[in-house]
Image 1: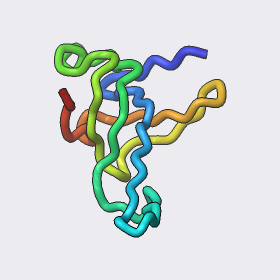
Image 2 (image 1 turned 90 degrees about the vertical axis):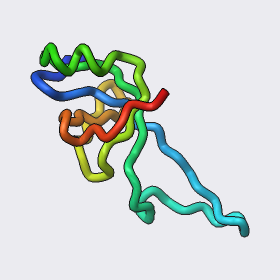
Image 3 (image 1 turned 180 degrees about the horizontal axis):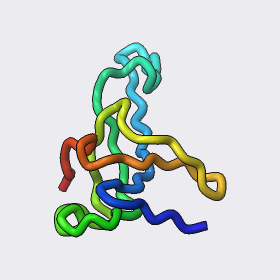
Length: 89
């Protein structure tokens, strides 16, 4: 199945980051209060957005932004332009 976001939305594959304390305790994502990172899989139909964000870009987006979806067993988020905080390079 192919997913093509509409308007000012972006399909993102979320990159999970695990953090460890100095004593080796792993801090789960639910305990973190920072934005999440992901890789852009598809960009919506908004022409202005297509000029700024390309497939393969790494982005930071708001922790509670976007909608979770599952396609062919893979987990993704559909994130609106307003929830995208930065493009990483």
